[in-house]
Length: 474
Image 1 (cartoon, one colour):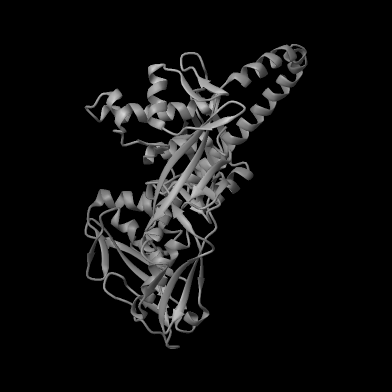
Image 2: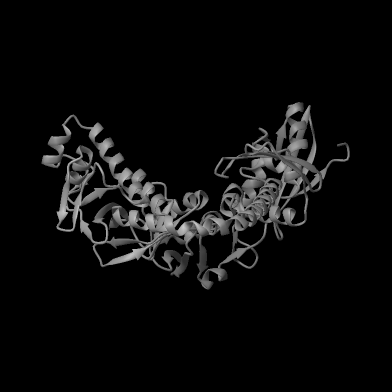
């Protein structure tokens, strides 16, 4: 069944919230599927929009399309696609309940025959081998080196003291004596389910390592010629670290961080709650990451160690924004921003940080900076065979044309204006995408066909961002 995280990953927060409301109010009609993950529907909003969605066999969002103007202008799923995904989710949930009700009726007869099978299964499980992993994370200059060590056994577990010899013997089928209570017979012994996956991870790394060297397996075993195994250590590449996390899922496992005491740790799907503090230091700014240490432990910034207590698996959007933030704090826990650059920080950088963290600003800055909402006006007129647009950005009494002017820094109250740079860029991007050029104080598109496409496709979305006006002859 498709989950909420999958839907949230496809859309931004605004589209998700609006799509949820569309779903709640029953605007999705004629939902159909071909049974192979392809869905179509019609969403009734200000107009009727046709939506297509493709899901994988694992109910992951594979592709989607909507004929609304917003979908053509912006990345990600629009509110109409979100509404359809929520409707699919609700249908899947109802179908699952009906299947479970049917299974409940047939459960009684199976329970009569289960005891005999359970006894046999218990006896088998007691004979299965268990690989118990312990993850080590060694941090140096904000770079984390991960490796695994293992204990092996059934009721009693023994430390695997030489990983290379262990893997080599398993491949050769040679018996391995760990102690009086454990001798492993590779040709006949079997691992329990998760241990089997861990063994496949180890064996795959062994094969990859062996393919990269011209030495024989025997020479490597005898002389330690391995880039992956070193005595008890199984060194984890970024790919194998991710595979290990996937194997463990939400289950707890042992972890040792920077050679301190061993502790239990687990993986959580979600976003850690972090806070960035902006302190006033003699008119300069000082950034610090509050609320506990946050350490990246994989190449794609998808797994983050938080307060040395839990590992968060974050979504791609969060990973994209947290990467530059953690890179900023790589060399120092406090970052200085000069007084001259504080205005740019508040207008350009802070809105990006706020997408992933709570930003706490020293009240002293509010005595020197003025944050005002952006309003915009766009005036359309004919221009040769195409159209022209005059754009005016407004911050209270301050108005300027971005094609020819830069706003003054100071207001009458002597505070520095903090502009909504992201909002300004979003408006101007509407013109850039349709190849408008600047001519004096106007944005112009002289091509008739391109102008028509802009008016038909882009203006409806632009009207949600700015007040749009047309010349009388339009």
